[in-house]
Image 1: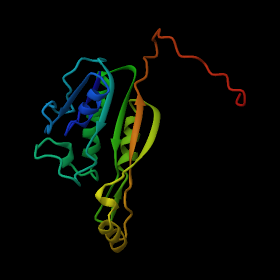
Image 2 (image 1 turned 90 degrees about the horizontal axis):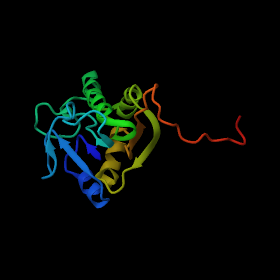
Image 3 (image 1 turned 180 degrees about the vertical axis):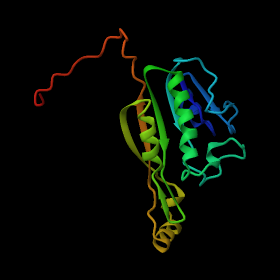
Length: 193
């Protein structure tokens, strides 16, 4: 079972269906017929009932995500409130995810009005309170409007860097300390002792 608590236009649903996976998508302002209207800070699923969570949350208020008054995307990523609300989402993901299973969170940084905000680093630091890191992938953005001559000229004129990537944090919910689940094979490293 895959869950996307901020499913928006339903890409996660479409991909999961192509791959033959069970999927549920929620969004505060759905734009896809199969996305269920719901706030990601209160996911209507049982504890430890999900195998994977994928989320591409707002990066701040630099894009108009929706008109919904409770949309996290209406909060500036320069405010602590933005990260407090994303932490509520992380807590819900932790609650619904089965032990040993993974979540993947896609996020980008922000550069607005000559001010850089490392949204990815701030989010990652918070996620480490709940999950253990499996991998961090830098996802290059290809074919987006930021790669056009207009944006290259603006970057030169207004002295800012073009953000050509996003972060994909792949993280696992740990097993409880007192579990009787057998751990996977131990690796014997020849070079490292």
